[in-house]
Structures are given as structure tokens and as C-alpha cells.
Image 1 (tube, rainbow, N blue to C red):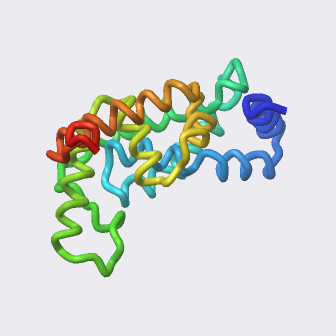
Image 2 (cartoon, one colour):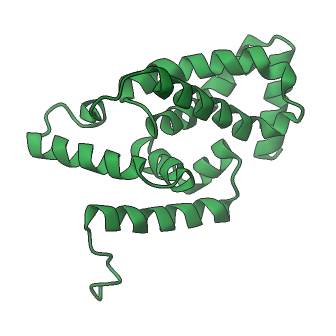
Length: 179
């Protein structure tokens, strides 16, 4: 059974009231939702909103026409929720502290804050794939499965996004320095 078929089966089971299917969908997609939310929100807000996104999705699950489209549909709910939260919340300094080891130096925390701000400034496609890779620790195939993007699209987004991130952070590309 393909990934899309497995997700579709879980969605159908969840529609029919299976708590186990709901749990499996949450376990499978929570990191992806969290990563998308981190592209817009403070870590604490992303943590809080992850659960809310799933509650919204479960309430609206009957509206999803194609169960295999669940990954992209869920992430669109996450994006809308993040944008709504941003419209109603005051702008604050990026808090990267939750994403960095507590024992990290002040310099490391500032670097993380700068990197997070640079990622958030990227176009959405690159921002989301980089957040899922660099913050959530997902592999390319996991990102593809959780977002509904093709493997090729994920590879391209990661490659181009890393290039833009390196440029934004002033980091030389290994190919540019002859390595």
C-alpha cells in the first residue's frame, strides 16, 4: 500500500469515528504541522496551535473530497491558522530559545535567532521545507510524504532554499570557494 493509500485509509477510518486512526494521523503529521507553523509563529505559539489545527481538521474532515489529499489540505489549514494568529497577535521578537539547547551560549542563541529570522524571510515553499528539514529533522522522503509534494519538488525546494539561506546569512557556498 502506498503512502497516499495509507493516509486515505486512515482518513476514511477517522471519518467513521476511529480514535486509533485519528491518533495515527496526529502522530504522522504533527511534526509537519508544527514545522509549517514555526515558519510564521513563535515556538510556544506553534506548539499551542498544532493541536488546534488538528481539532479544526477533524471537525472539517467530512469536507475533504479526496482523502489522499489530506497532507496538503492539513498544511493549508495550518497556514491559515498561523496567518490568523499573526493578524490578531502583536509582533514580538523571534524567540529561538525553545529551539536551541538550554546550555547554549548567548552567541549561539543569537545565531539561532538570526537563522530563524532568515528562514522566515524566504518564500513560503522554501521556508516550509527548510523548517521541516532543519528544525523538525525530517528527511526529504518524510517531507514529501507529509506535505504531498513530490520528491523532486522537495529536493529542489531544499536546494534552492539552502542557497538563499546561505546568501542571507552570508555563508559561502562550498562550490563558490572551490571545495
